[in-house]
Image (cartoon, rainbow, N blue to C red; front, side, top):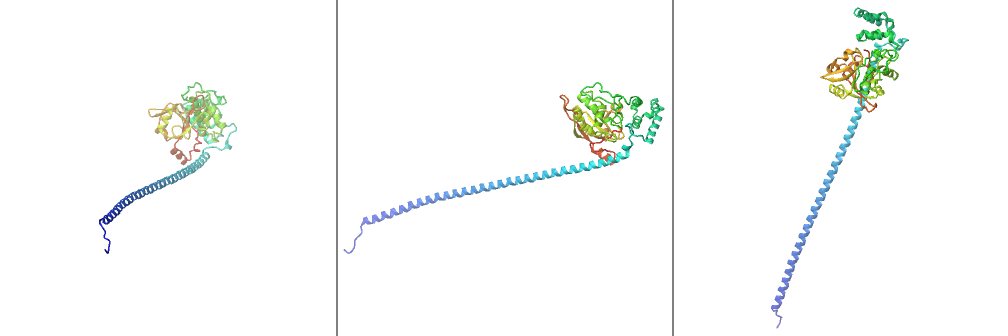
Length: 400
């Protein structure tokens, strides 16, 4: 035989090997496919995680940027508010300076036009006489003497009277009896008390009351003529504290000795503010408003009003508003019993009011409170324009 013949066993062995190879390939492909599938899932998860991280980072950056923007906006706002406040303060300061300067100039002009200089003071402390003005007063008294002999009594002793007392009696008939007694009582000692006082009730005190009206107010006037300011302080201090020893004469002495009486014989508005602290009274400024005034009066806070020309005075005067009812105010006018007995509407008063202040007590016993100042800018500038208003918040005349 030239060759070896392969039998059936050889064929079976070959088929078996092929089958194993096929199975191996199938298994390998399955395992490989499973590996690739798992790997793909892992890669997809990693990509998703990376995207989420990047999204979170972007959100954080955006939030941080928004926070920074808000902070920058707050800083700009703070700078703007501070700058605006600074400009406002500077503007108010400039405005008040200009207003004070104008008021000072107006006062100087008014003083030059209406008052005698210091060189014209008489030796006895009364203002030296202007012959023409004095003759005018005497002529008026002569005309009045035909209807009331008390005027003639004054004329018979005219040399005993300074000009300001003659002017007072010519302008206010209510002062006639006081004026008649002037030569006899001008050197009398003022009373030490105002009489009976009820705490919480503002007593009506009159500046030309014989008990204190003859007392000197400074060196060139008397309480009866120029003491409406001290009399108002005495009224509210007695009413609020219950003390009866705060007389107009004592307040006038305190005012003159502490610089609240000017060279022109006027009471400074500072007596109503700083000076009132001597008697335990403090104060707070308030605008001219009927409801606000009524509320303060209802709370038991009497109001001191500085009045311009009108029903109460021809130039300047102080009164006390004591109550409000049925749309009208009650007043204590230290220069008139008649006006003190009347009621006054806000409409009638408002254009005459220059300054107001409501009062309460402080530092006396268990009482405490405040004094509120009110002022009417319209009236203030009206007076400035006519050169009849005095130093802002400092000067209000008492020529009644």
